[in-house]
Image (cartoon, rainbow, N blue to C red; front, side):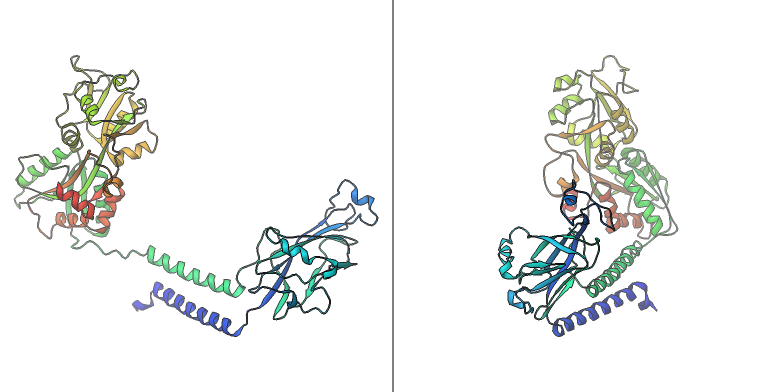
Length: 514
């Protein structure tokens, strides 16, 4: 039966324990009166002479040898505290004598007593006088009727002789509507327990049940499969910058939808759009199982392609760590990529030639850079190895590489190199200290968080498009996968990779504006 599932049993058990515990506590509060309580504990019982029969002697420069009968001296620190729920007045003590409590040190003789109290309780010292009952005889110490507010305490440092450490120490006395009893804690810095054993047991049981229930709920995979799971094969091509997102989304979809096979084959936005257009022209059914990702809108001349806006991507300029600059203006970037700035010293950097590391013509990242930052195309390629000019007339070294990963690794390895990348890929290398750092652009920092919160106006960003050839059938794998991308789990993956989903309120506004 479904209602007998593990999480339901734990939930019902937790509720029953909670109800019973609440009832018991209500009964306790009604039936058991609030009590006054004095607790005591021995915080120290140490030998200080050189002839103690048990324990290790702690000789103090022979001083105890010089005093008669003190060769087996011991020091005891006794803490007495009000750890009940009410304050204790002087007349709450039930002793018929002047004193209120009696401390008995079995088989030992008291040689001296010192009283200490915590800061802020100097008023307690007025009660420790012989007239108030403070005295000792043999192994018995008489303690006055000291009034104690809730939580207050005092300590008695007692010098003894004639017996071993560890012998029994008792505090005797009575309180009206209360008790005097030893505490469990025996170390100097420990505090007595705030709750009773029963309260702690109930708390532990309730906590265990709640944690178990939470683990069951968290670990159980209740997420339903994507709406309209479809079988078949789908190829996702295009943007290399967005490829890591699509690879993870493809794996999640395949795991949720048995019988689906999604291949991510990214080799540039423009190349992906052309591949989709060619596949559509050859497909007799009108819509091939291909989705092309593009950083920004497709080039003109492909009217058959239908767009789906899925995310906002942020890109960044990166420079080799050999260049200490942390930011460039838009004008400085444009002059660099027009070849007008040939050496970094022209921008206040070191005397080192500028090396421009760019993407190939099929790259959407490059097209976004040209459209959003440069306002024009880049200058011609002048180097194959990104180090030496193949064209001696070129103003600067400029090379083109096939992927964002290649751009990042090249910039990190070449002093004087500058390039551009999708933000999250660049951050993964920067955070790993791989020889490059990000540059601010026009005083603005590349940040998805600032974009989402409307802070700043960073220019190097673009909408990520997913193109299909015409409108794919509703029951096709392409339609199902695109719907999966735009829903909850798909948006979570997009966020994880440092992009802003178009389905969010801010994303809708940016993606709608184009």
